[in-house]
Amino acid sequence: MGKKTTYILIAIFILLAGGLFIRQKVQNINAKKALEERRVVIFNDAAEVSKIEAEKMGETTTLSKQNGVWRVGQYSAIPSQANGIVQGAVDARIFSVVIDGAASKQSLGIADEDFTIFRFFNNDEKIGEFKATYKEGVVYVQKENDSKISIVPSLGTYEFTNAWVSLHVGSFSKDAISSVSVTRGESHFELFLDGEEWKIGSRVANSEKVDDYLNALSYISAKELMREEESPPQVFSTIIGITSGENSVVYELEEKNAKDGLYYIKNSEGEVFIIDSETASGIVKQESDLL
Image: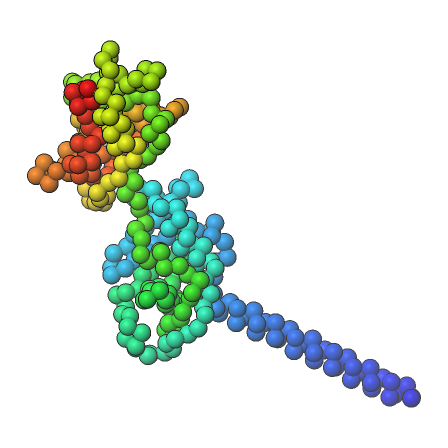
């Protein structure tokens, strides 16, 4: 074989190898592009998100992260809800496109007003957005600036079905409570554990009544949240102080509406909720109620 033939073969080999390399490079780029197109948002790290807006039918709920804690206004957000939608957005991948172009959503039994618009921000910079709804357990997503409706099975439905804020006012172990003080105006008494007996002053309290009272205090749930435009009372007429282990908890109460039997209650974190009269009567007692 002559030198010329050898050089030609080497040149052909180089061309083939280069062609294969370029082809593989293009395939890799196309594969990466296809994977990127399946993503619902472009940010990769849930830690980048410091604010979420969830808009439905013109009403927007804003969640902001403050000192690592998600909050909705004055209330702590449910961590699993807030973290769930952010991580869900990062992990979400389109499974299939069910509507493309101008095809009607009605064929799926869904309408524009069924969708929640989720916007994600890093400080004030928007870094992601999509619309989502669900029907019969299937999550449908419309990416930002995209007319296609897609199925995204990796996005959970709980973000659409549950509230962002819990009605949980406060809770702790009943068995850890060692004292309870109740102040109503000028009236004040303290219930405390003395050995194995609960006492008010020098008098022994009724153990069954005390047990019911501690059960009521150990878990308090609100009837509703205070509206954003509503101002909490400047003064609360009833103060309940609870010592549980090494922790001290204070609840403050004030009547909101005598006709409806509603009361404001403020917990130790400064969150103000609204409770009904049954809950209020269970946690606000007089000395005679426990003797």
